[in-house]
Structures are given as structure tokens and as C-alpha cells.
Image (cartoon, one colour):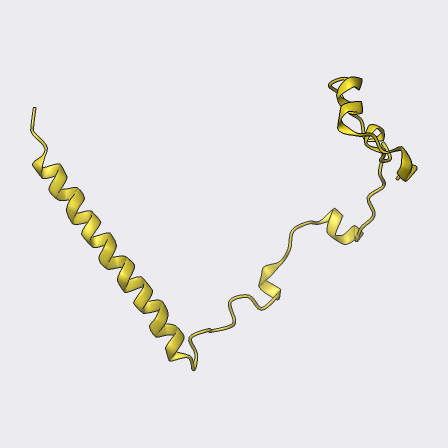
Length: 96
């Protein structure tokens, strides 16, 4: 980063023109990004070795299972009512 006291304000950038460079913002034009080379060379994350999917949140937790089942039941009932209304509206449409 360049001198902190020399950071432009928006009006300075607008007056300069439509193309704004990194140095116009008080930043280096070619920032060097440093990071773990293993990640940058191969950004794919292997989730099979992290243990995902091995935890059973319902095991020894019947209250959680009941709460989720209740939520699903409520939504299924609402969805079923909407489906029946849609069918009824379709059947009540005048035929051409």
C-alpha cells in the first residue's frame, strides 16, 4: 500500500476518467498473492476424508427427530392443501 495520506476520494477518481487502476486506489498495481501452493495448484477439497456424513444427528436424539418430522408434516399438509386447490382451480376453468 502506498502513502496512507495520499488516498484519493471518489470525486478525484471520477474526474480522472472511467478506467480506474489499482494505483489510483492507493494499492499496488501488481499485488503478489501469497498462499499455500498446494491449495493454489489444486483448489479441489476432498470432502471424503474430512468425516462428513459420518455423524448421525438423530442417534440418541429422538427429540430432534420428532421436531424435524413435525416440521416436515406441517409443510406436507400445507403443500397437499395447495395442490388440491390448484387441481380444483384447473377443473373449474371454463373450457374453450
